[in-house]
Image (tube, rainbow, N blue to C red; front, side):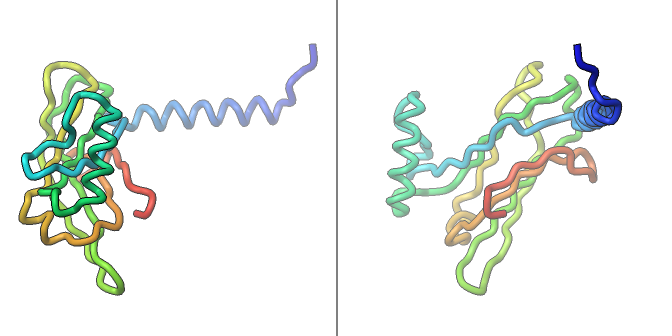
Amino acid sequence: MPRMPVHLVILIALFAGLTAQANEKAPVTITKTLRHWLDLEGRHTTSPSLLDRDAYQAHLRDHPEEVSTLRFDLQLRFRTRDRSGYRIQVEIRHGSGSLIETFSTETALKPRGKRRSFWNQIPISKKDYQALGDIIAWRVTVWEGPTPVARDESFLW
């Protein structure tokens, strides 16, 4: 059986140690972020089917006159059961041409039950959504006190 070079063994050990250390530092991860337009009745879909949801979201994207506001749905996964002291911040870059601004809103984390993985919704008020105009990019950050612990962002952020 051939022997593995010593420098390769050291490199693998260092990488494994760094990966384990990075995972220990993250008390929460954002598993999934979904941006949903809501219609005039406050619905993001017309049926429980994911295919229907995606089709309805495409319809709302093509017909902005039928959109009342926007909502971000986040799936969060915690490493511990203690979820006190966390808040979620949503930042949205909007505008056009040379005038691009950033809108920001913040909400307290609302855990449901004792599960370590759950969904949380962050609605944008109708007034704020109407003031946004063209949305360019978004970023969602989970904060524990003054420290950001998890982040997810759109491609253009």
